[in-house]
Length: 258
Image 1 (cartoon, rainbow, N blue to C red):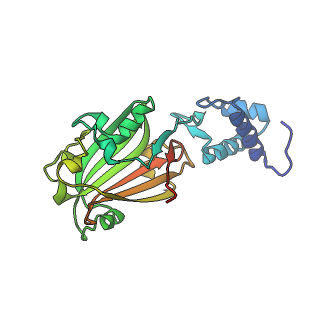
Image 2 (cartoon, rainbow, N blue to C red):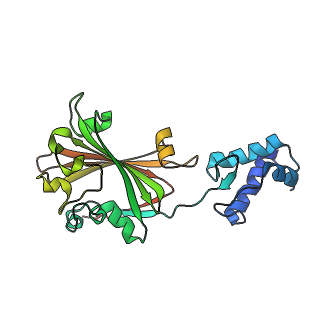
């Protein structure tokens, strides 16, 4: 490999491997050649080879597998979210209790020809400060937390944590750690009608726990979508915090010009 001006030896290795990945010569999921093979190929030391590969790991192009193997990062087919219609009343009409089809996320994934599933846990917690504020809870106030790890075709795609003021949902379906649905939505079925949503979207790097739960390669940002639902009187009924890895989602909006 010819020496490139202005590059260190490690940068040369990274640039050549990056070119092979971007051209498809090293396909998604392919195992990188061993350190010994790369040393022979480039004529550089083991430490230099490691530094070149490490640069690609830090970029997120290469991931570390079990043992010492390195692999080209695999693409996740993106799930398309239409947030214009997300949680609209009309989409709740066909919900059936206990069936995943009643879950709007699962319905959207199924419509794309993919298989959804969720791992669900339910607990009573003191919510994070921003959720407490969104729900207008006092200091030390409790909320019911429904935490979900969402999978598409058995690959982790998102985290979705919904928080409800405890006194509103005690003894309801929302306390059950399973997929739940009801005609018009579970909250509506107990007389709590969400008539307005407020969305906040922040893009950031994941926490360590988020990265582990979502099996995120290095250098993968996430979008944190916080949606708070209110009734007609402006009382907050629910706050849902969804963590969406940047390599697995596409967000669609349709906005009227009026």
